[in-house]
Image (cartoon, rainbow, N blue to C red):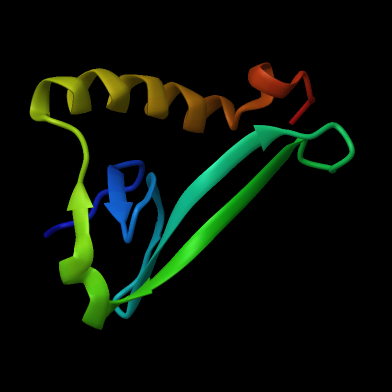
Amino acid sequence: MQFKYGMAVEYRGNRGWVDFIDDDYITICYIDQPDRSLHTGRYQASLLVFRENWNEVRCCVDETKEEQESETTSYFLQSRGCDHVGAAC
């Protein structure tokens, strides 16, 4: 499987999205929620999945939904989420 940043995936019962891609591992963000007590305004938790376990990661989105979500993800990335948490970036 070729991973893309923001791709919706499931790994060992945990659903999330690909948050980082390296030659040896990926991270999957499975918790993302507002938290005003943090500097970034968000609390995130990620799973680290090494290359030898990539065969256990499955895509959770069909192509039609993926196109729609990539537009949303792209906007979120461009704005760095600032408009979602009310923080200045």
